[in-house]
Amino acid sequence: QVQLVESGGGLVQAGGSLRLSCAASGRTFSSYAMGWFRQAPGKEREFVASITRGGGTSDYADSVKGRFTISRDSAKNTVHLQMNSLKPEDTAVYYCAADPTNLWLRSSQKYDYWGQGTQVTVSS
Image 1 (cartoon, rainbow, N blue to C red):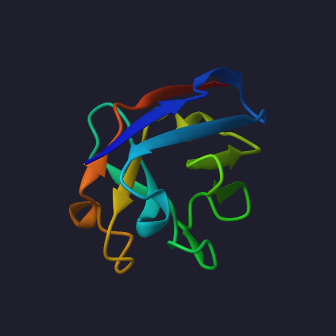
Image 2 (image 1 turned 90 degrees about the vertical axis):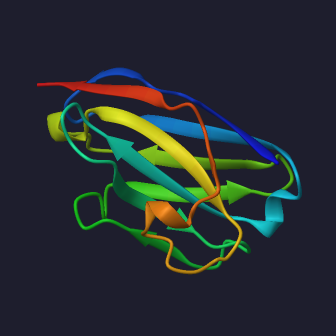
């Protein structure tokens, strides 16, 4: 079992920044690739970013590329999502997730463990 707890969401104006964190407990954090997904009201959950087990490879949705950065701190069992130049369309509940396979990380179905989500609201 892996428990994931997100934090750092909130209300921010367009153009602003937020840093989301996801603290992992339970089994070895380094055994899991990590991903961030988001879900806006009335929309399906969508991939935002992922990072492989060792942190060597990250991937981003086109909509956030160049604005968001995913990172992981193995010493603290934490993954972060730095979000800059936020837009109103970034408004959503953001979820972190853990995947043991380290493959096909854009698919939400690959992930075994999920956090409860943190709300991000970007005002225009």
